[in-house]
Amino acid sequence: MFLCLSLRKTNLNSVAKAIRYQEPYIYANNLPAALLNLHNELSNLVTGVEVRVTPFLEHAKFTTKAAANIEAFGKHTKSFADMYARVLKNKFAANIRIWAPSDTRSKSICKGQYQLRKIASPMQFAGSQVSREADSTKWAVVDGKNTVCLTTNDYKVGEKKIPGAAVCLENAGLYNAFSTAAEFLFGLQNIFIAMRLTETTIILVLLKTCTAQVATCKDDNNCSFHQLVPTLRYQLHGSLEHHQIVLKKGVTRISTPVAKLESSLY
Image (cartoon, rainbow, N blue to C red; front, side):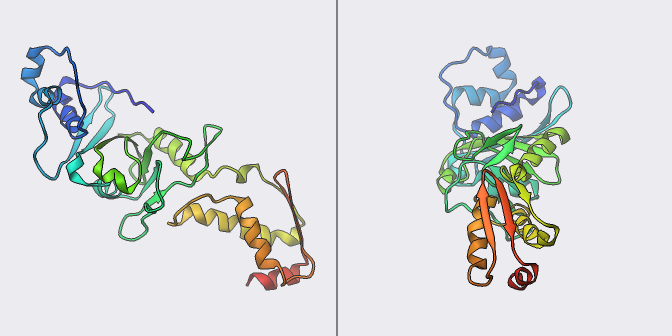
């Protein structure tokens, strides 16, 4: 994923300083000496001057030529910081939702004033199904700020020892597009449910259960209708004499006496 920005020369120092904290290796450059003399941080970047000042985190704010608000973050290896939990969540002082490769030890963070939530996988983006494992993009949406951050780090314990960056753009249209994808779980929209009116209760329970995986602060994993059905069958088994659940090509048919069904749900 690429983000191209048009910047003014007055922003060169702040941008270069944020990039320095990513510890890039620049093996060649053709920048004129006159430009480097005017911008000390740019000179430090291209000549490989080492960062020695704690806390080994950099946060720069600037605007593009089109007056878009940008915030850039850089984290050095010596910071031992997680890009999402420590940097973005704390710097924005807001709830964030993230999409990045993760491990089993890196969970959604539900405690505290601000939450960090892993977006459920797979999701639907621009009409296509996308799974976290097969996608190389890494991004986060900052709730309440109309901001989307493109990042370079995975959400894994080992990433604390790896330098990284995040470029965050404040744009309502972009935020809404990413936020919609984050909330839209692939699979449910393609399920057709055939039922009688008297059987509405059981369907609502299923949909409510699945929605809760996205709307509440839980570790997401995959919230899909097909995963919920075995659990439902287990709950109903032995408590009802007459029930039938048939799954075929995404069509679910449920036939259960209402009185017995309701008694088993409460």
